[in-house]
Amino acid sequence: MHTSYHQAVAATGRLSSSDPNLQNIPIRSEEGRKIRQAFIAPAGYQLVAADYSQIELRIMAHLSADAGLLHAFSAGLDVHKATAAEVFGVEPERVTQDLRRSAKAINFGLIYGMSSFGLAQQLGITRAQAQTYIDMYFDRYPGVKQYMDSTRELARTQGYVETLFGRRLYLPDINAKNAALRQYAERTAINAPMQGTAADIIKRAMLACDQWLTSTQSDAKMIMQVHDELVFEVAESVLDKSIATIRELMSSAAVLSVPLVVDIGVGANWEQAH
Image (cartoon, rainbow, N blue to C red; front, side, top):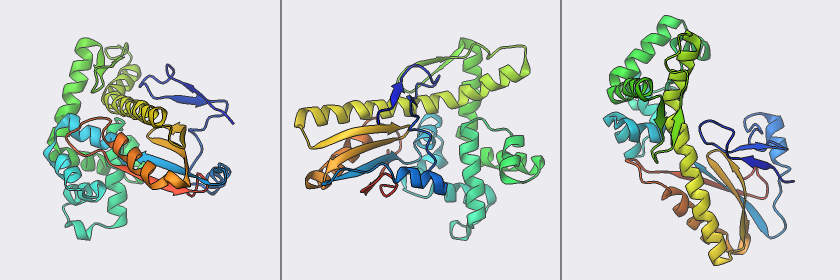
């Protein structure tokens, strides 16, 4: 089975996949896990799934230079737990799963430009409560708010935003009279530098891995890219050495103010590798 990857479809620069779309197989549902079990390594080989951990949040920490986020990632803290402690004013050890879930929704929601209405729907709370959460978040992480405000203003002025590596993403509707179009462009202006930088980093990692595989003739293949994840088919005889090399190449694909952490799983099939 061979998917087709497209480099010039997604506006942020992410690869997209079709015929079949291998980037859209669910991982949390029972059906999705069963489908992933059908991707099986040949005898004598294992599938290795290497996934960037919270890469867009790490890019946010780097771009915003927010002291709180930088500390959480540099200290290796559970960033959602740390956010919950900050936003809800409790000690880290008293953060419940519900509070962590709310903090996670805020962390990722803000990256995608989520409004108080969207956050309220996701958490099942009132819009006023959601706005209070967002205000508390920005109060604790002022660098993030400053970054978002300045990015929106820059986008309005120049009509585009850039990834960390200087790749431009144009926003023709950023000054549109139509409010819906303008607000969508503003959300894109916030998200595109992060998602676009993540796309740049994974492509740099793919190039580095390809160079390693080609130059060493290692008994391994890079077989799939699923956004922040690379999947390899690796001979059991070189498994440990290959995992160490993959981790090093992926974690050094960019130099950020916080570590690029790579989570790696191994299994006889794709589901086990998670």
